[in-house]
Image (tube, rainbow, N blue to C red; front, top):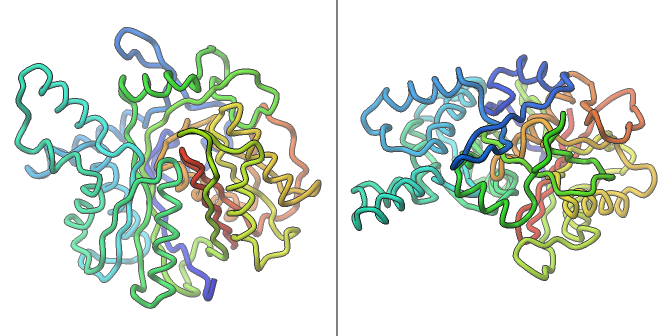
Amino acid sequence: MKQKIAITSLASISPLGNNPETIWQNYLSTKTLISTKEFNGQSQFIAAIPKELRTELETLRVSETKYKALDETVLLAILVSREAIKNAGWKVGDDFGINIGSSRGATQLFEKHHQEFLETGRTATLASPTTTLGNISSWVAHDLKNNGPEISHSITCSTALHAILNAVAWLQSGMATKFLVGGSEAPLTAFTLAQMQALKIYAKEASEFPCRAFDLNKTKNSMVLGEAAAVACLELGEQENALAYIEGIGYATDDIEHNISISDEANCFQKSMKMALQNTNLEEVDAIVMHAPGTLKGDTSEYKAIQKVFGENYPMLTTNKWKVGHTFGASGMLNLELAILMLQHNQFVEVPFAEKQISRKNIRKVLINAVGFGGNAVSILLSK
């Protein structure tokens, strides 16, 4: 990278909450935030946002007539975006770009409108504009009245980190000086859960930790879905209010055998990590926030990739999906949030049931991974 990128703010709504202190305290707890809920008469594991935050969501929905028809992915994105620019010192109407994506998009609304069509043969007037993927960034742009580009994309579970890649390119090219990036996901629907079950990757066994992300000895898949939105404010160069700096970026795509496959040693992660670390001594990386979705292949292949890149002396490894579930397009930004919190508090957050990590005195650089269906990997290197 030509120049470091400052992260001057980050805001999120997730099962962890929406307040940095609450989020950190939840990370320090060894309890999972995964619970159960009935879908079509069947109990399923999910990680939902707290009830009080859902109340905030509904308050936003009724605050303006034009918000009443929006999907939860959009409302979540609006709430966190307002908070992020306020914390960064940006103002409504400022010059900044927006790139907020989603894996599934307007899942809830799409299912609702499609069901109405099946039952009546007709659909609501706003069915199309409220379910297009781009309407997340578009509505955030309408709400914040920014002067700058607004971009949307879906690259499955690496969507949020791909937004960072886009922003870095814009910032380093000189075409923008500020960018708001992130992901939003509200996938807790019967149809989405059925899709995950059809892939045979969803958690079934009741236990203290239904999602066994980074348990390399598990014998069954244990992925659990969560809902969240998270965005970050990025600015070029050193900033007094920087939470952390982006020092390296990497990306790669696997050669795949089928739609959801990843190679045995996650070649895509090997390439993306090496690219992100090309100007960094490997010994300087203190921790890695893994993608680790809780599936047999996903967890072990990423672990093998880390061993291939770092050898026997690899950094401390962790993941947050055992606690908050897999939030699809928002998951990479929640990984970024965990990395920033560990840098700020100089404290490593372990996975309680995983192999004990060799402790390091200081946490100065953290690598973040995310990968989506099709082996679209992204790695981001953060520093204090």
